[in-house]
Image (cartoon, rainbow over the protein chains, first blue to last red):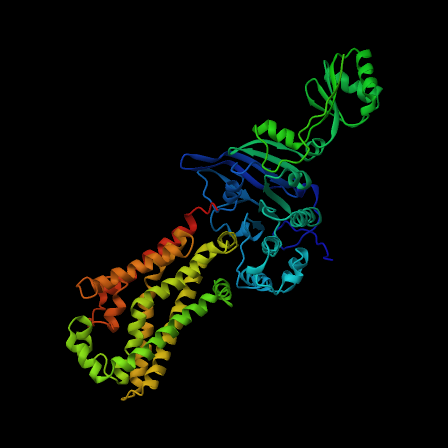
Length: 345
Length: 266
């Protein structure tokens, strides 16, 4: 088992570990007005986003939505038509060496030198990065579970193991930021689960800030602390951790005439603690579903008009479909059905 | 910088392309071993010389006399000719194009290493590879000529053959950044190979014309001659060398610009 180290943010050393709240508020990735046009095709349009330290930010969108182009602009692989991207305060232009020293990336197709073994691929990169000790290689080998493939030529690896090798290379210099473009693309279910677990571990145990793109809702829901939905090159919405979790829960939605009073009644009279005001006049209650009539009665008795009470289960997919007008390519089976039981007054 | 150069050499470990390029050199030597015993026979020389044409003129001029001094010229001449242009083009296509073929180009571009260093390191590898092939070619020819039992051995002829091979490889190297640029532009092996083939054909078409020595791909031929026709030597003067250097500089500049400015969307 690898020992965790405290992450240092003064540039004085490399290591992974927990972080303070102040550090967590630091913007690690920023884009402003980021735009890319390929001829007449507007791949990305005026994208502004901020990813804070410690976040797992998922960039969700259909194929061709502009996810990969955004990531490539962030990594200075594609020149923006307008706007800019910054990582760790460094403007991302070719030869942004200081930013790359603290950033690891894995793009859609993990490349490796096929004639070299897994070990040689990693050792070569270690030498290239000026890292002297073998321990650095051993750590990523263990982390990415590559031990049994160390002496296999990279060209003979399965797609999943190539992806692991790509991830190991990305992690070799102990980056503070990890940028992953569709990291589970083309993997079998077991491979997908492994890579997801690894990403989760890196974020939670090592405090690495992760920016990943995906068109897979399940992936996003399992990994992300924040989701940005991109469609036709535009960032449509960002969803935070709490909302993301709530989107996967059943809830009782109350349409009321007086939100403030309704909240007071729910808290004080009905002792409801787990609820959220969705918008003016709409309150979602995430507990006591069998007490719907009681809530209704209490609200009415307190003079709050209740237009409707219904049970719903919305998830990210429903939201995504509504937002973009189309489902993701691998929509989650069985989801999207909104269950409704209505009590109309 | 040295780390990047070392890494580029490490990438060649067990690379089959090393073997294939060596096979080309051995194949040329094997061909020499088969053909030279025949074409250096006095009766064959006499028949060829009488047949007319450019090759006959070369043979009549004594280019195929069975002695160390003449036969060792075939080494640098072979490097200067078609196999040199194509094989070194292949080497360059491989070194620069494999990053795209193996999907490692974007990894290389996102390393904390200046992109220019990567270009320079790759050119160093190409130079070393070209030099090694030229020396191997010269060494094998020494063996072939020894097997043929040619007379008039002198160390100076052997040394001159090695030196000429190296000079030819150096002149050809000046053309290789342009080939590398095609590899980066086309993201693979085919465009640089097609370009090398085209340059070889243009070069062959120009040999014997006054323009030939100004064409950088033909300059080596004007240094060491050609085995298939008489070529006026002494064409490697300051002007044509400056043209070759300008092509080299333009090629390196184009590579540097490309690696910094080109999009890598896929």
